[in-house]
Image 1: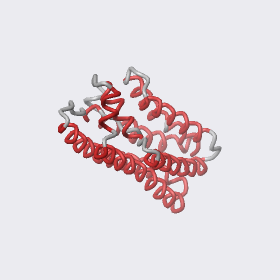
Image 2: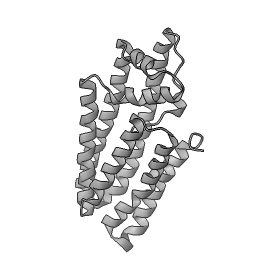
Image 3: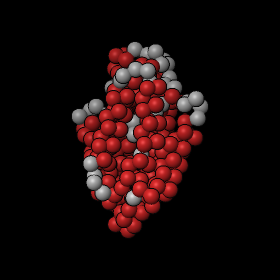
Amino acid sequence: MLKNNVVVLDIIFYVVLPLAVWNLGRDLLGDYIAMIISTIPGILYSLYRFFELKKVNFFGLFLLSNLIITFLIDVLAGSAIQLLWNNVIYAYILGSIFLVTIMVKKPIFLYVTLDLVELQGNDRGEMKELFYSKRILSIFNWITAGIALKFIILAAVKTWLIQQYGVEAFDKGIILRQALNWGFTIISLSGFYFINRELGKSQTPPIDSNNSESPT
């Protein structure tokens, strides 16, 4: 079900339900509580994705850690406007982390892809050696840099939205985040195309990008 309807489910759990909870619940519950409750559909959906992997790996642990941290900074914010600012700060931190992994030659997207190819039955050690070849590593670096840029752009635009609209920036941020996620999907699929082309030169089985998930 998940693989065949991932776009529809993303829209429902990351956009439609959060916006519905926010707009319908804020008058009754207040802005802050409505914001927190609106994140629950996305959290439950992301947890479902985590358990769908049927294996604890780098991507699964990253996804779970991100969910826990995001939930904690929301709950501990104490107010609606502080919740928005906490998410801006966290987006900058995530962007910085992704850039650091490039600097230390361990781009996060490479390890996410290793999980993917291992689930497809490939030997992790052999694929890691191939991925660290100069040309393929360069592609992983660029994709990881693209993810970092997504977080930085998201944080910068959210900052402007908060300054312009206050708590009313919340629903605009939901739509913006999902739009950037879809933009990253296009970038990652393009990256898989070039990676598969390089793998083809070594007669290695291609990566099935239809099963790929965004680390974000």
